[in-house]
Image 1: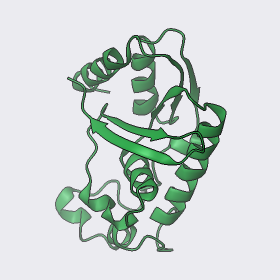
Image 2: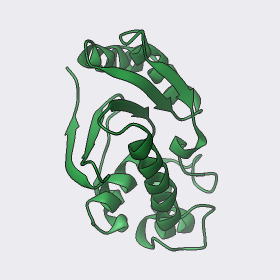
Image 3: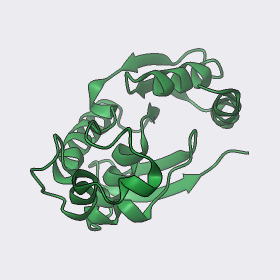
Length: 169
């Protein structure tokens, strides 16, 4: 993680300071758990757990492409435009199912509590779209800044009641 990323993570950590957060779940991928560890310094009572469910999608078919080449890549186009495509290792429907299942599990386990999950662009965006009942193919229209905060608030029955997106400053 570069210095800018570390500074953004510190600002995010500061925004959670003094909040009653006892659990931080993070993707096992390096930048995510680095971010979780930085946030955790502001929440010394919080236990950090690495979980597969928060990992980014497998982008092996397009990760090395330059931006101008990316949109000519059939795999990337299929991923973004067909939520059930079989052209990629994990499509948007499967990603939504993975994230929704994990979210339900966390909601049941941590009813009435604030927790933090550190993840990546597509898991965050796809979960939000899914929970809001929007087409998953809208993922191509969303951007998530590093160390930003997407908030999901659930009622006692684990039904979504509010979402929010902020960039701590």
